[in-house]
Length: 68
Image (spheres, rainbow, N blue to C red):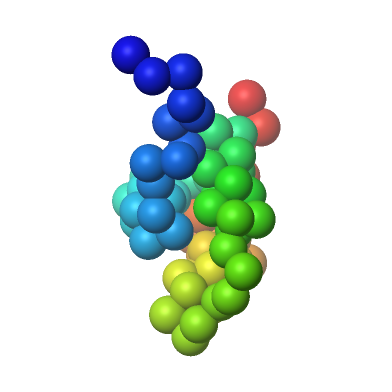
């Protein structure tokens, strides 16, 4: 088994789909999202649309923020 962080296996699309499917963003989801976003040098329209989907969901109350 590799000692590499599991977040390396996730794409931005996969993380956003996970968040939207469960309608919540957990500490693990925040970690995955932060990791994927900080390792990108460029954001195209597709990536911006995915990030907007999460922020809009939080703003509209469709995605809950879970602290524990």
